[in-house]
Amino acid sequence: MAIDTNHIVLMFNDIAPTYDKLNHLLSLNVDKSWRRKAVRRLKKSLAHNTNPKILDVACGTADSTVQIAKTIANAEVIGIDISDKMLEIGQEKVKKSALDEKIRFVKSFAEDIDFQDNTFNAVFVAFGVRNFADRLRGLSEMVRVVKPNGDIMILELSEPQNVIMRWVYNLYFKNILPLIGKRVSGNGDAYRYLQQSVERFPLPQEFVKMLEAVGCQEVTHKALSCGLCRLYHAKKA
Image (cartoon, rainbow, N blue to C red; front, side):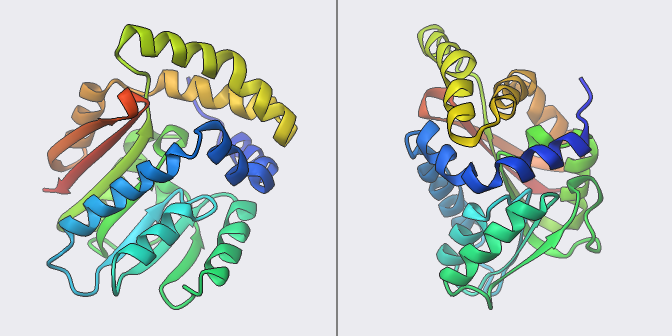
């Protein structure tokens, strides 16, 4: 199913004011630990870089952007997103964290990143690949702007493989999550879209093949929280 980019922009602009609150509420704050684990792994992989330049794709309200800047010393972090409202909230968050000198934002589509080839030491994306209008093109762009042997780090929601966990997941995501989303944000469709976008996302082995097809090597993936989330890590060939 094709993703309507204009619809995605309007949807995220609409839910931006309640986005952080709902993310933390609906995940019971587990999303914060997922980001911390991913950023710690990225820090370890970038240990040999004294002043790494990192791109946070589909950065949203900048939770990951701020986490990266706080965790990785001397990093320059650039966040890109297609939602003006999300970026506005992200900018406020950066000012409150006194990270203005380490972080800047650019409005940009993941499928057409406005940076030259081999610009960044690493590219990071948390819960954004599901929303790419053209997944292969977005991944290709991420690889293009990373330096050779640079890091590609991807966090994405996934359906648990365990039968019992999948039953609980389906009950929650299909029935409870949209109701809470509608009550808090006023937009139940956005949270039905969330569940549907996770369902449509490739299985881990299929996604690994996609990453390899766009120029990644040493691709690994790890299940977090019984498979509710997966962390993919690759290097540019």
